[in-house]
Image 1 (cartoon, rainbow, N blue to C red):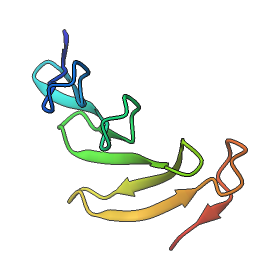
Image 2 (image 1 turned 30 degrees about the horizontal axis):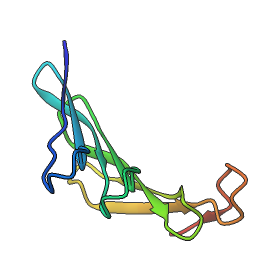
Image 3 (image 1 turned 90 degrees about the vertical axis):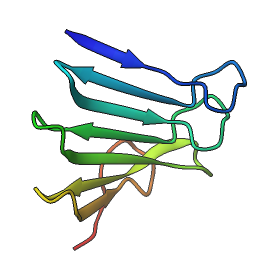
Length: 94
């Protein structure tokens, strides 16, 4: 069973963050950092509820363009970026 939680922490009538759980384990978060109604950060979790990937929005381009990958200790180990905004990764950081 999947459960979604959408708190309206700033009480503007729109959920600021969304948390999705499956069988009690966090699977996905979507965060609206600036309360504009759009998702700014999306985080994916593995079967144990550990962070494995996050995507961040480029505010100037208004789209997700940076993806971070995490190790078993939930430490960021590799970012990738779609710098020219064509939907494909073109910059890898090591």
